[in-house]
Amino acid sequence: MRLKVIGCSGGIGGNLRTTSLLLDHDVLIDAGTGVGDLDLEQLARIDHIFVTHSHLDHVASIPFMVDTVGAMRSQPLTVHALPETIADLKQHLFNWKLWPDFTQIPSHDRPLLRFSPVTLGCGVTISNRTVTPVPADHVVPAVGYALDSGAGSLVFTGDTCSNDALWCAVNDIVNLRYLIIETAFSDAERELAIRAKHLCPSLLMEQLAMLKQHPEIFITHLKPGEGDKIMREISAGASPWRPKMLLHHQVFEF
Image 1 (tube, rainbow, N blue to C red):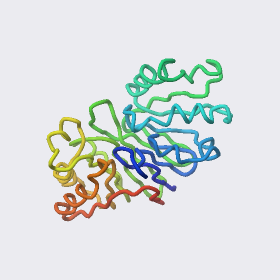
Image 2: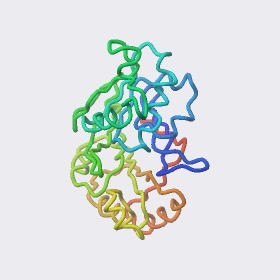
Image 3: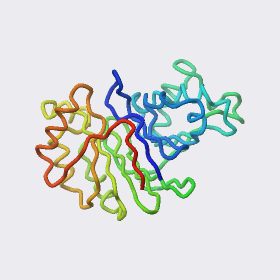
């Protein structure tokens, strides 16, 4: 299993791209602005998108993607998400006002897009790869995802704040090799992080104290312009952990 980071920033500007991870050649975990860097052939090969939640920085490329390559494909693009997230995408995005409803184009019987609901803890297996929703706590219904190749696992938390249920799920993964976890704000904005249901370095340390596994840890969703500051604060309090900044184009194999 090969996972490539094509977007991992909390915003845009310069070379920054919002959240999206490409699993092998055919699966996306979230579909932020980084998807736009893929060429037409790469876009057309993607069959599944697993969405953590409905916020624009995680779904922005889905409308453009299905419009661009939907007709080049022999089957609908499948978006996997919580039922609440699917409802939000239908009501607020694919609603004929912001974007056409591609679940009805070219017809109800032959759509270019379809939705598939996910359930916490219930894995979806695609060609011997299992993608399992894990708990997240955000301002809208949200999940993270555990990716399991059989030989190893990676957990991507998505957007979350303090979340005991996440660690119960993570600590049960015996072959965990990598943990990608968000830290969107610096400690100077701890109260804003709590209100927005994100993490800051001090909250991150409180969460990592519940981790009983020993994966490599990578930090994502850093606020543009504050990445270095946030990472310095994390490094100052990370013992015994040594989290690293997740990098654009970084590749994980497991």
